[in-house]
Image (cartoon, rainbow, N blue to C red; front, side, top):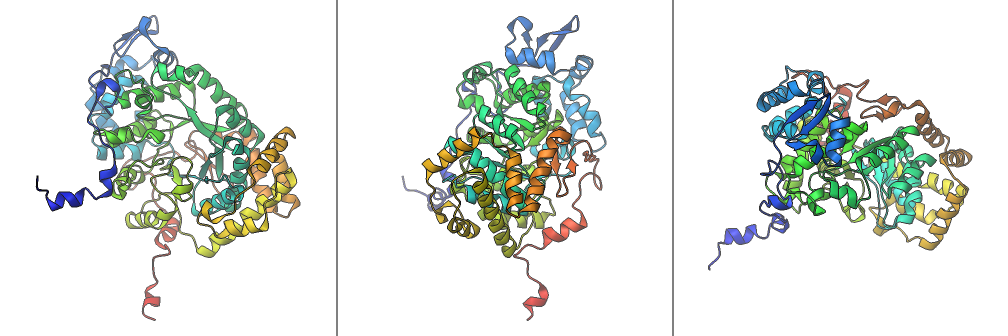
Length: 556
């Protein structure tokens, strides 16, 4: 067949490399409104739920039992379930119905009911609802700081730059698991060089992640995964109760944490039970609420390729973010792992959280080049900073980033590397050389820095752990070598464990270590002129990107 030249050109476009598939409900490859999703129902006898979404109590799986016994509000559920889903959706979208009023009825909806409610909305209506329903008034952002070499000085420098650029949370992980403590310390030190109050974490195996938190190497955790079907939980050697116990372990030491879930994980693991991705995700969110956990990282996260391949998949991701907010959970709303070759498509996916604002618009903007992102890359990375800052400027949106000057970035990167150099010297880790400090100060990524002696690093890490090194030793090392301001920052972060303020929903810190959360920064959006607005002071910063020229200079 003779081919159309237009179609031949279209086939060269990046989006042609993406994977798409028609719906396959039996395998869970349907984003929303699956034909085998249960119909909403509730039946209560003797103050106990005996039927939930068409299933008798004798047939409950572990998630049904947990949600029925620990999440749903029996005092209101029969009244709320009797209401029309479209009318409930109108209340959620309406600027004349307060967030508090909505929050007080959502636990009267079963998982099947709440997806029926959000299923009546288009994406614009969901975005309107997100603007009202997010927990914290002020939106924020989180980034990934990793590198292919697990190079500690580079992590510290990248963390300092990211903190300077405005990220309130930073997450690292490892290429080699034994590097976890080193990476966590590097991220902690670098983050506190860039800006006081930045929260950091290292995503690894759960026992190690908890140990690092208790030692004071990290300030929060989020890679505590929950799933929407019993079989996936079983395959992970977990239950809702074991995850609840782990959450309580973090809380007992004053550490903020949130669960991680997302549409597509059950289908990806082969146990979707023939249900839609959004229905299974709603079960994860109800389980999270019942466990008493303050928040969730959701938005498909590392499974984004699954919903991204089916119709309405990106809409389902927005819907899962909204359900998290309806349940009054902190929402780190995804936009992390890359899923498309199309720049147009990745920006469109991001805008649905960027425009209304979420607690963390990205749960992983790549604060490093994507070739260094050990979370499999992000939708946006360091090479997109100018684009992202311009979007903020174009639309007068606070996306969590600030313009910076090149000389300030160089200065803070150098200071972070030198601060970590001092810490490593005092805690007995292998030396960070002056050559490495110089390299990471100006580097684009790990391709520009020397290799480390991996075996020597491992020996140093093991020795450090055996000596029971904690965050206190990091503070002492910084102070001993003249980094008193950084030592004070790290010490203040450690003190927050005792205060416990940042266990509140959606908590972050400002540069003076004031806790900002859904308690004292409550979202009060009620239509135009209310809720979060970009302040005049912030707008002056957002406007003045490095690409914006002074008219007076143009005429010279």
